[in-house]
Length: 189
Image 1 (cartoon, helix red, strand yellow):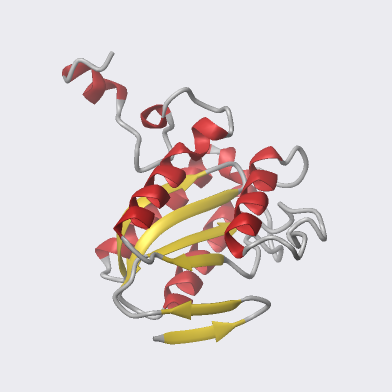
Image 2 (cartoon, one colour):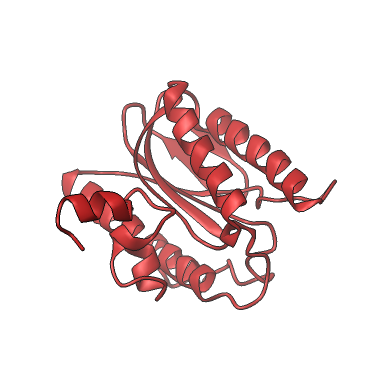
């Protein structure tokens, strides 16, 4: 088991699936990420995620197709490199959720992913010397099979919950996405 600490403790038992969330720098107004102290960690996470989904101010760079595609490619590339197995993901306007099984230290895989995507996204946006991602990410290791299924559903239903699409397979930047041409061949449309 590895452990690290920034503002939050990060505990990573070996061989366990990990639910990760990271967001754009400035996506949460100062203090908004600090939930009331009476909430459980799960309730605090849901509150933070709802605030990200409902944000009407702050950066939304992930809405740009070239930026979302860059993040998606890097998610797949990390799996190809053997850094993790990827089960589910969604790229929202200002944050990313992923469920993965780490095969290298989580701090290393997040640093690699965030540094590369930040550099390339800032280049595409014509920005230099500006932070792209918030430094810290949120994580939760999966305890059992029921929780695993709930997390996959949570991730893939995030665009539905946010009111962006009617069903998960319609959202382009998600592991649930089914290409319209593929849906037509199997009679889904």
